[in-house]
Amino acid sequence: MIRFDNVTKVYKNGTVAVRNVSLDIQKGEFVFLVGPSGSGKTTCIRMLLREELPDRGRIWVAGREIIHMPKWRVPYLRRNVGCVFQDYRLLPNKTVFQNVAFALEVIGRPKNVVETQVPQVLELVGLAKKRDNLPSELSGGEQQRVAVARAFVNRPLILLADEPTGNLDPATSQGIMRLLDRINRTGTTVVIATHDAALVDWMRRRVVELDQGTIVRDQARGVYGIDATSGSIARTEVGARRTS
Amino acid sequence: MPLSADYIARETATNLWRNRLMTVAAVLTVAVSLALVGAALVLKQGAANAEVEWQRGTQVEVWMNPTSSPSENHAISNELAQLPYVHACSFHSQLSDYHEAQKLLTTSEFSALTPKTTPASYRCTPNQPQDAQFVVNRFKGQPGVLKVGAPLQQIHTMEETITVLQWVFVAVALVLLLSAGVLILNTIRMAIFARRREVSVMKLVGATNWFIRLPFMSEGLVQGLVGSIVAASVVFGLHEVLNSLSNNSTSVLAQMRLTGWEIFGTDAIVIVIGALIGTVGSAVAIRRFLDV
Image (cartoon, rainbow over all chains, first blue to last red; front, side, top):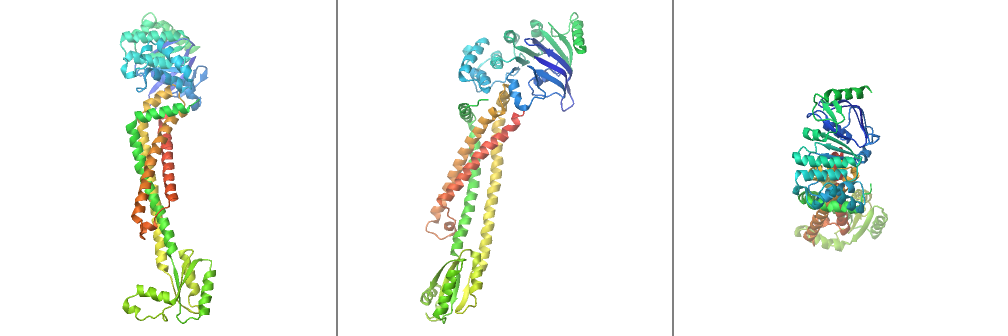
């Protein structure tokens, strides 16, 4: 579903954000990208959305090579990739319903489809009763649920989340994770870049750790930090992938 | 992607109302700038009209010798009628010129004249003021002709002045148009800058550039149209004021008077410029925010 092939990204100021990253993510996987600030997690997410282009290497998303994709096709790529951010990125003057409906209007879905699908997804995220509220009238957790609903309403193949719980308390964060887990169970591939060690440890899903732009660990059911028992296994996995 | 007129109309109306302060700023900028452009265009057209009026009034006077024979008079009259560059001629008899001289000359000058010693004259309007020179050359020294007079130096000066004046007004209109364009573009850019987050969300959920651009262009069109209609009204008002001031007058203002069609044409130009600046300005202003 997602494939990085020897991807390197160097910013104009010389900072190497990502260095020779190779990574395969299968359809329906739930993957955490972890690592300290500046390790390259967000750059990976931005490259998957074609907000950034790598300097070397190739990237495939949903079967398409996206580096050489013409600019006019990028919106169509983004319709297959839902995205959730730490700062929610909701339109402040639109209601919950309108914010979610917007994602369907943009791709030209007819009115009757919008009116069927939006209430369904609002039900899924538990905000059916707040459909007419503005984002400013919601809590941080609720705003993030709206963002998830917007990202999922057109049933994308992939859902990316960049620090989705960065502004939320632990209990609310767990709620968002449960929601993302439910979405993953519908067959959507979920990739989350996060700092939240507790959540990663709690979820026990595949963990890809980046450090200074390089993958240092890729663990099938991992935790946030390298512990004594899993560290050696993880390194072996990365080594095996690189040699294959 | 299907992009419905309903969506564009809805987004345009909502955004204009939501950003009403910016909308008012853009409309006022368009109105003030284009009113100045329109005024410059009116003055330019006025100068052109004044030139036409003045050309109509340019006359060459062929003074006949008081002792000229009727056959000489007849020959001159025939020749004048056949000249292609002479628009029209009128004959003023000796008596008629005598009475005119009475009005124009001082008593001491006039006392030297009698109807018999006053020359008769042909007063001719050439097709173009510069044709006056040909009439002068043609009749000077002909039998029966006393003198041929034309305001040649004045014609030259007036033509130059009006040409310069017209160019000045065109240049002023162009400079104003340029500054109006920059002002309007800047206002629209500020309005879009305030909404860059909205644009980034649109991009994020997969909106095509045209889907984002069209409502903004539609907003620009509305702002440009409203502003330019206000400007056109101001230009029309200016025209009406000038008309009322120049009623029953032979001043320059009266000569500059524009016809209904001319003022309609100027207003149409102002409105088209406003609509274009609004629409194209929005498309240009949003371009940099679309490149993500």
